[in-house]
Image (cartoon, rainbow, N blue to C red):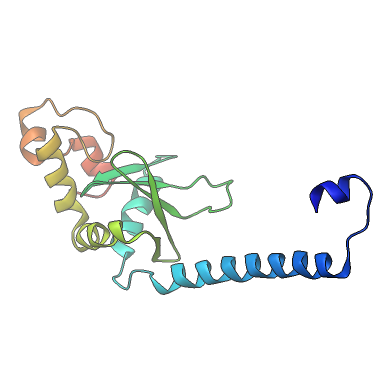
Length: 163
C-alpha cells in the first residue's frame, strides 16, 4: 500500500478500510495500555517520598536524586512534559515508572521498594548508606566515621530533612 501510494496510485475501498482498521486498533491498544497502567497504580501513600523531594528542593537542590531499596528516584525537570513528577529507575538506571499526583504508575518491580521507602525514607536512606558506603542523597562515598555509621552524610541529612 505504501509503494502504491508513493507511485501516486489510488487505494481501493478495501485498502482504505484496512488502513482505517489498523489505525483504530493502534488507538485502542494505546488506550488499553494506559488503562492498565492506571489500574496498576500503587495504593500506598507516597506522600513521604514527595515531601522528601519538596524539602530537598526547598533547600536549594535543582535536580535532587535519592537512592534506596535498589531504586534511583529523581525529580523530573520543571520545563519537561512531566514537571513535578518523580522518575523511578532501577540501580542500572533503567526506567521503571513515575510518581505523578501522589501515585506510582509503572512496572510492578518498583512497587514494594517504593512502599518500603515511603514508610520511612530516613531508615531506607540509612540502610542504603550502610550497605553501599555511599550517601543515598548525593551518591558520594561516606568517609567520616559518624556518617558511615549513620549511612548518610550530615549535610544531606539536614538538607533532605532526614535528621
